[in-house]
Image (cartoon, rainbow, N blue to C red; front, side, top):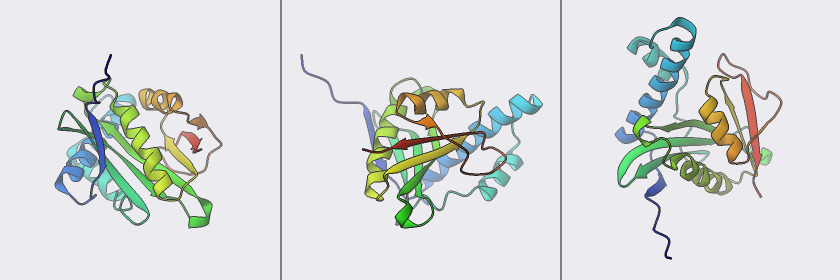
Length: 171
């Protein structure tokens, strides 16, 4: 029985492109809303989202030391994932950032497609290891990472939202 082609495509995209800016804003709104719902019982305000975008810019997700990957599902823009080299090149570690799928595209295999593309992009950056930090309440993301070979590691970063640290060695 022939296997049908995947409806997912993932390609590198300029972080400055309007498509990327829209996805990054949606990502920040999504994680900010989840944070404020958990801690204050409300959604984030537009001012809080704007402040977060300024305080945590994504401009380092661009060549030569980073990449922003945009996922499409059946041609529709569906999500993104960013990757940036950490520290000196000799370290050979890349950091995963801004993994996001639009709510209507979740549960369709997009996370797996993005993470497979991340592995390829990391190798292209010369990385042999990918690390990430995340929050405890982002349970779906943590489960996705674990299914794709990421394991908990000791803390390697600081910040108000770094509560869980994970890593994956590339073979």
